[in-house]
Image (cartoon, rainbow, N blue to C red; front, side, top):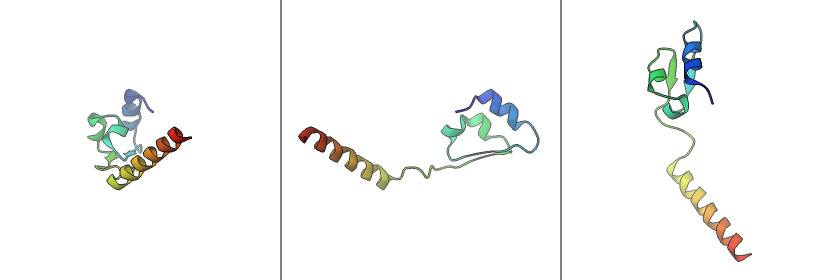
Length: 68
């Protein structure tokens, strides 16, 4: 995690850049609008099918726990 004012100050120095996979991870729209900031529009971390697989694993783990 980072502090927004400190990151904004650091980005004000020449040669500093910020790269983020999502706007939420960056910390806000104000930073995303800076010319030396690049923010992805879609996170590569969790797809729909990955959510389904995770849900199936959670349900299976709960079943195993409740039957043991």
